[in-house]
Image 1 (cartoon, rainbow, N blue to C red):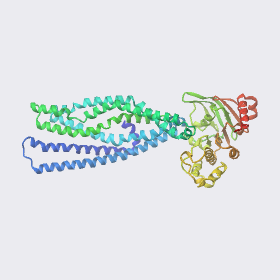
Image 2: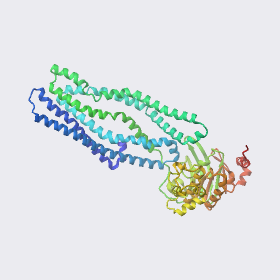
Image 3: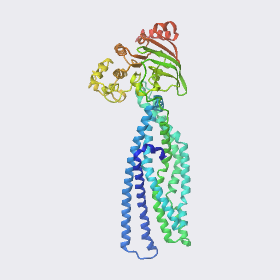
Image 4: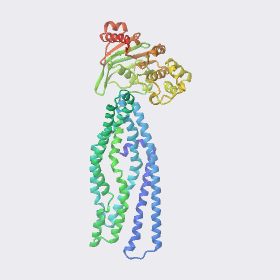
Length: 576
């Protein structure tokens, strides 16, 4: 298991080695006082006269050993913690880099709760291995082993008695490990589910309150928490008896030595001096052994968590190369594209071409695959088969950063960071001047609500942009895309949360900005795309028809039905 963590330690591994040496020396100093104590007791057993200076010197040496033990132990743990936390930093950075290379679909499948658990709980547990188990385990196991070996040179019979408790303790430990590992997957699965449910419950609390669904929502919340509680308690109930047994037996090396050894002395099979020395040696190794086995119950969890992290890191990265964009123009082509969510194919052999400077629209009923196609274009996922090209270059044959430089993407749900609105817009082009940021905000019709805020564009967005309404967040996101000024623009229901009063202004701003650019629009409101150069009608992951608005009204039954519904919705009104 140490070998799995070692690559992330880098140069800090030398601090762990020095920590192990320091702790080992500390354990040696903790054992020496028992031998000094024996030197005081041995003359008394033989009836010899003991000088007070002799005793005083041993007492001072014992005090020095205990002081040295404390200093070396603290120094060793200081070194091991320095190495451990730098290793955790390297591991988190490496994990972040791997996640950034993976399709967003993989990240979303993990869920916020699982990702939080990986980056905090699971990685933090490895600190126990690096800062404690390795340096303390080495010293607290090696020194007792050496002492036990030395006992065979004193009296092999007493040495065997001291080892008699080890087989029973190791058997109990093995049973605990076996039971613990059998329930490990279920335990961590319950923890991940609970974390995801808690995050979902908090994020959806507004909806729960508005629709008075507190009972049902809390029922699921309570169920998952109770399941995790019951799972944990059941797991520990199975492990506790074995944990108690090996925790009692392993450090108690004198459990057989004291009664049976006394009988050996009475029978004359062992000398009283050897018996006292054997007892001193067994007491000397008892505390180190107890410290060593205190980590035993953690090793199954550490093994599991390291393997979980490795499985997460081993997920196939998003297909890309180190090449920059080398396309001849900004033409977009979908060529026999197939794509599946998990095991279900949702895009079935789509062919679509959008010429540079054209505006194309994807329309269709919910679930027909419109947003999925947009996300495939910006390479949120890898395809099952087929290919997507930009300017004739496969989007997998370039760096994802190079592709992102060519495309501005505004989706239905946009995330705002908890910083100023100015900084949120400037993400689109960090080197932009303040004047350019303000201009982008103006084009995206943001000035109306910015003027109401205390600090205007320098006001804070709040966590996830909670200080703004849905439409306001979308306008900030549009300003971010406008500032980026990429040659290709993808709008996935960019006006979904805009009120009718401002929709006309937004559409006018969008029309001005997309002039001369290659545009892909996903829309439910057909009236916003009737002027598109090409409209593709999707049905169950396939293109049913494509053409202009007038052409589709003549040849596409699905488009005719969608247009009829759109026309009727214009006449809807609410009556008291």
